[in-house]
Every structure is written in structure tokens, then in C-alpha cells.
Image 1: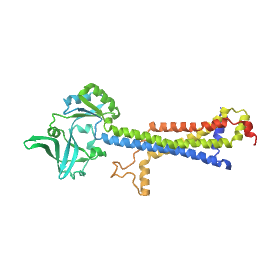
Image 2: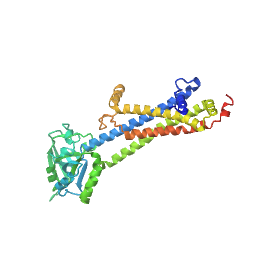
Image 3: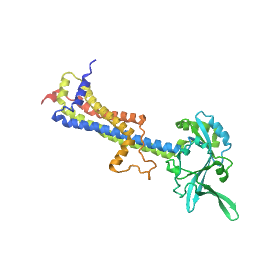
Image 4: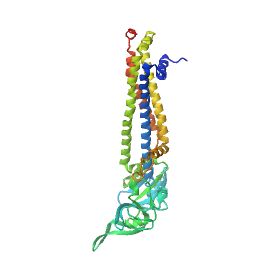
Amino acid sequence: MSIPFEIRIGLRYTRAGRRARRRNAFISFISAISIGGIALGVMALIVVLSVMNGFQRDVRDRMLSVIPHVQIEAFEGALADWQDVARRAAHDPEVVATAPLAQEQAMLVRGDAVRGALISGIDPDREPGVSEISRHLQGAPIQALGADIGDKVTLVVPEGNLTPAGMVPRLKQFQVLATFSSGHYEFDSALALINLSDAERLFRLPGPTAVRLRLRDMQQAPLVAQRLAAEFGPQVLVQPWSSVNRTWFAATRIEKRMMFLILALIVAVAAFNLVSTLVMTVTEKHADIAILRTLGASPGSVMAIFMIQGALVGLLGVGLGVGGGLLLATHLETIVPFIERIFGIRFLDPSIYFISELPSDPRASDIVPICVISLVLSFVATLYPSWRAARIRPAEALRYD
């Protein structure tokens, strides 16, 4: 089976860069720049989006080490008959563990240091089933309070007792047994854990304020929450993990889209460099085009030759960009430390950011659209030069040759 002559000639024009004559050298150089520009843009898109995916994944995982996949809570006060709520929730096939929670706002005091805190009363026996806080326990002191392991801190509840001397806040002293560091500043700086029974007595609650659930697949949390909300009705609030810090996740998605659009402009500029490359090629190949037309080639065939040439440049640029982008994205954990050692810099200072390494998570859902958009832009860039080549009249082109 013979290859159509349009493809053969298009391939010949594309390969002409290595053995081009001097007058074609500049065209070959511009063509190489177009390939490099497309490759650089595609590579930058893949690396940047992979890093943003990695950041989102790491923050999500650190958040889920503290919060449950789904939480069923009372709108006010204690949850009525929490054991029944936990039992009914456990019947869902996605739920693998349940645990009670009593949570209120309070203050922690040690000496002159006062800090607001979210006090969570937990059941030590059931809590490991729904969170990973036990994996993050450590012996570091509490910097904000200046308290170390074994020190005493006072928990102050704003809703106090009414006495003849006025309203007196309720106080209870606790001993620091351990600290935890999940890597998420919001929780590490403001969350304190105490025993569930102590929390109920301190906050004068008849029982837990919520039931926390762990699922087989955290991505099913919105669907599970929807099913449980329909089962329990409006008496309780059922929240999946994705609704916690919803604004952060929404901002991350918007930022990712904007970065995609900004970096796609690099690909667009490189792709439309093909216009100048092909226009110069058409100008230089006037005589060749005229001969082809004289031999019976149709305007559509001439147009196809230069469209094939431009498409091949786009394919080559996209292929190099995908290869380079995946190589960088999958080896950032070794490339970034190497650059930091060479230049003596630190991209992510642990004292400022809660992570010290650039995470990366390349996804096919990002790479496929990048490739498709880049190829479409490259194809669109070939239309005008190819149309111009198809309009060349053989007699006028050969008049002075």
C-alpha cells in the first residue's frame, strides 16, 4: 500500500531541517523554535498542574488525618440518642467505623499565655477508627502556651456559673500527655483533645454533640452524606469532609484553572509561530508548488501538504513536552533537592510552609486535555499558510523562475 504523495512531501519538508540549504536554514531554525516552544509550554503545564494536584492531595490527606470522612452533628447541644445514630449509620455499606464527639469552643491558659481553642472530647478506644491523630502524636512542647509534656494547663469555658459575685467562668486543670502535628496549621494551632466524659461534664452536655464516620472510599463521602441526610431528616446536620474548608478547595480549583489558562498561552504563542514558519516555507517553495499544480495536484492536495508539515511539528512538540513534563513531574523529589544543594537555596522553608518538599501528582485528566488543546492549536495555526499555498497560480509562480 503506497503512502499518499501529500504525506511523503509533507514529511520531506519537515525533515529538510538537517540537510537544508543555506537559504532554508532560517526557516529550519524557526521551525525548531516552534517545536521547542510547544514542548516547553506543554512541559510547564504538566509540571505546574502536577504540583498543584500534589499540594491539594497533601493538604486533603493531612486534613483527613484529623477530621472524619462524614460527620453527623446536632444543630444545637447534644445529639439525641447518639448510639442509635451510630448504629444506623454503620448499616451503610460504605461506613467502616463510627466514634462519638463532643466539641465546643474554650480557652487554654498557662501562666500569662492565653489561647483560644476548639476542644474535642473523644473516646480513646473508638477514635483511632475514624481519624489518624494517634499516628501524629509526638513529644514536642506546645509553643503557643510554653507547655511541655507533663505540664498543667487550665481550660476555661466562657459559659460560667452564676454566683452572688456575678458570672464566674468554669475552670478545669488538665495535664498535657502528648502533642500532635498533622501538618495542617488550622488544626495544629487550635485543636485540643480531651476525654469524652470530661468534655461532657465540663460543657454540661448530656451526651456527644456529633458522630464521626470513616468510609471505605473517601470519594464517596458526598453520596453517603446525602443518603444519611435523607434517612435522618432535618433533625441533624450531615457533613462530608469536602464541605470542611470548602472555600479553600474552591479557591484551589479556580487557581488551577487560571494557571492552566495562563500557561496555555505559552503553547498558543509557540503554536502560532508555525504560521510564520509555514508562510516562509510557502514563499520559498513557490516553484515546487507550481510544478505540483502543473503535474495535476489539486489545491486541496497542496493545502494538505503544509497542514501535514505543521501537524507533524505540533505532534513532535507535544510528544517532547509530555515526555519531559512527566519526567520532571515524577522526579521532583530528587530534582528539587539537587537544585537547592547546587544553588544553596530553599524553595519551601519549613518554618513558613507546612510542607518542606514539592509534592507532585500527574493525572491523565490533566495531561489528555493539555495534549488535545496543544494539537488543536497547532492544527489551527496551519490553516492560513496552507490556504495561501493552495491559492498559488502555477503560471505566475513560474514566470520568473
